[in-house]
Image 1: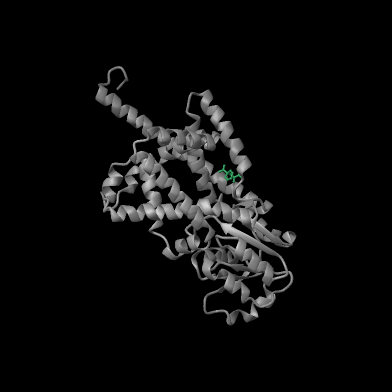
Image 2: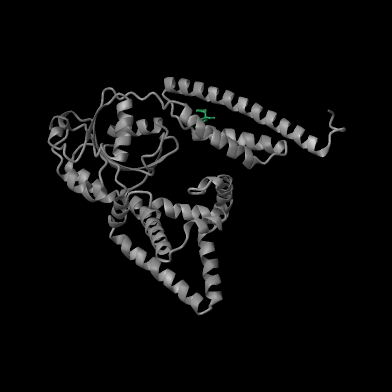
Length: 384
Ligand SMILES: O=C(O)C(=O)C[C@]1(C(=O)O)C=C[C@@H](O)C=C1
């Protein structure tokens, strides 16, 4: 049947068949790309190169964006597709061939979620790993003298006390922690051990399949050259390292974690107190509100102790949060009095403070929101 003689309904069916064929061709190409990425992974392993290569990704994305524009396709479309495809590459590729056969590593809290995650990675890389649980301190006696790395991965509220209980470690041994605060554990580690000391704060949870693209904050303590092997290992596994001081880290985390978690907690607690119907709120929400609701709800699927400890670890943040409350109260008072201009004037001032970031955030979030919209049907609980 030719296009000319087909009825509109037949034409629709023909076109859909053609779309099916195109999608299948796309699938073949994705499969071909996956094989290539796997091969790249094998070659990179042999060369000892990292899994995640931001410069290569930036170059490839910018070239494809230009090509998309040239053929009249949206550059954002190809970028979205390729970013998703590259995320698949991380899973496909084996992390770089890291050899830690000559290392003995004690993970204090290695029976916990994130401690266990790192202990497993080290063991996979051939290290001799001892995962120290709460009742294993005695059993660890034989491990301390031969440790090349002692990594603290225990709850914040006991980290410093446990560090203070450490027996003398070998001079070359690296003492490190993954606590989400840095000033106090760093002080404790530097006081307890005269050798190399480094603070790490992985900005992710233990649910990850790979370290690719994940951020780890690094705070230097002492003898940086002696723990480069550890930082190099993290990079080879794909992590992105961000170096800063313990004080700057903690100050930033006051806003990134404490302000966020506390406001999120209160948001959730308030919804509960007001008996809001979550499913109804979800049904009435556009992607941005849905995302916001999810950001709140996901907190309560996690560990209460962890969040309490993060908030409690920094008493100085309470003063900051009181000021936050003042800002809230002040804004609400203006609005209650109908003082619209006070609100809009402040709005302008805050907008100036955000400056260029505002525009960039609006553009970047637009893309994320489009993906959130694509995944809408996934967010029903108990629905069909
Ligand atoms: O070129 C590489 O090094 C790859 O591993 C391939 C690839 C990709 O899928 O295109 C994947 C991960 C890297 O971050 C960069 C690019």
